[in-house]
Image 1 (cartoon, rainbow, N blue to C red):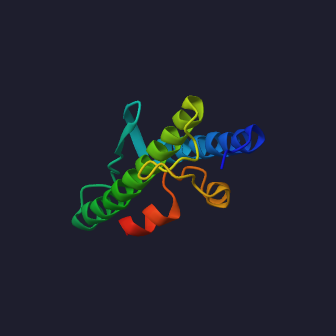
Image 2: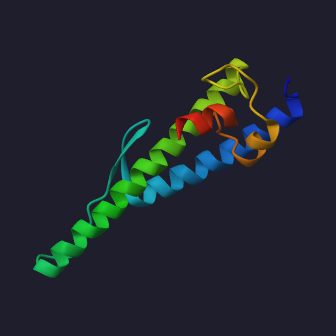
Length: 120
């Protein structure tokens, strides 16, 4: 099942919008280290024991959010690269077409639902 150019262009727009959102979120809670790597910001609430505990809690939250956002950004960039290379909508595990409805709902999907279910 070949995806038409209009469908792919719409998904590319979706992916570019999502990329911008991810970059904005990462820039709020993290510091850019390299092109695709960010480090969570360590907040400074003060020197008292309860303030230090709050700093650690906030950092842990930022760290887990940073990792999730980085993974999402990686997948968005991978999908944009697949569009450029003409491989968008092809499962990276089994080379079967990814259902267009899945791509509409989740434009950065790189696997078909069969392979996704196997990986869970």
